[in-house]
Image (cartoon, rainbow, N blue to C red; front, side, top):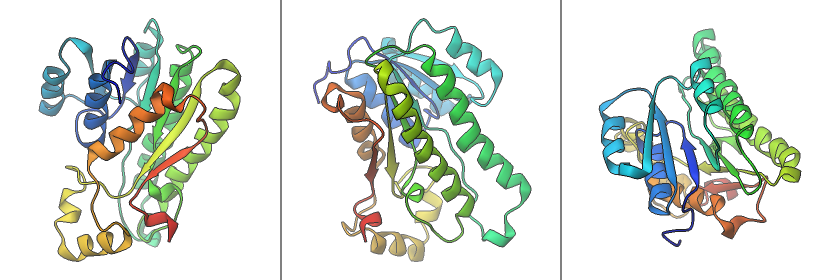
Length: 242
């Protein structure tokens, strides 16, 4: 991908401080975009600010709030929106608490919808939205019923937005990763039995890196994908094709 492929584009990335979000923010920066990196205040967010340099702006706060939407509304224009926020509480279906149900629905679905709705109001022809979903938005899995439900919801939202926004020249796609090695998944992958299960489910036999997901995002935001909308680019090493 050309280093100036996204030059002078303004990109907003939620959940940007660590893992996949951080890799996406840095990849967009490397291809020329000016990046608004959004996450709760943390040392990771501070170091991301240093890494982005003059091409970065930091929005430290809660993306589920009206105040966050107000920030988007005050932005002059937006060319790229990456919806990357999300949460999961792996647990058996019959033991899911209402508290966990509500938290996942609020962050994974409601907040994503509200951010996308506000972001579209700042977008024009040639803009691109990428929703980070999951392979669990295409298949089912034990102990992840609510997470699967929310990610299936965002896959549906992606398709509906793509159809409605196409006449305005705004493309909407999703990237659906498998288990990626991040600070969030590191404790799970530290369990030899779980790691063996994951690698056995991936025909390529490797655990993905955040940069693998970031590369897919950059492609979907680029002119190379100018005829791609409503698509879910699954970055899963073959998990979902079995």
